[in-house]
Length: 281
Image (cartoon, rainbow, N blue to C red; front, side):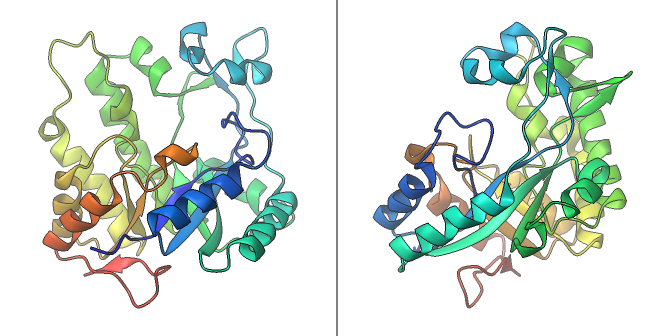
């Protein structure tokens, strides 16, 4: 099977990557080696600060530079103009690879207006909407922090409820990324492993909101392939999907894409005429 485009990739223009330069070129080179028809660089575009604990930064010590003494992590804003210059250089260096510009806009129901004011934002070809944070009191937290504050099941349910609110509150993105993001951090101390069927109605409710807004749902395969996501998405009226490895380093580019595409075809989704097209049914 021909590989689909990898539509969720990060370069040195994402604050959470370890590379300071040249990552975009290495990702493109890896895409060529794998035979990918296209790649989309969806670097992080975030405007909110959130609270982190020291344990959240284990393995991510390079993020400590953005953390204040009170534990609030404030990400730097991506320079879209310099990012676009990097894309142009890669397009010239890798003419056989289709390179799509984009961004992963965090919490767009809170931040789409700020993003729209950035120079170059209107030139981006694809914007993913991502929910990484939930507000508790006067602070935002990522899932690792939320699982310390709330019972695990409450975190997943509130996350999915907020997905619906995000869809209703923003028209600033065309693809909902990693609807299962919170479940990546399901605590190992729980008595039982994560079971999607415990949250089936909550997932379906969020999917219905996305489907009714005529947006695509990303099949994020950074950790695993989840056929139940494609099945429920189709049953809830979803018409379009994209695939994304969410790679922050070249070694993870294209990960699980062939298997995910096979599962998508089994559920009635098919590639478009162009590698940049959504897969539809």
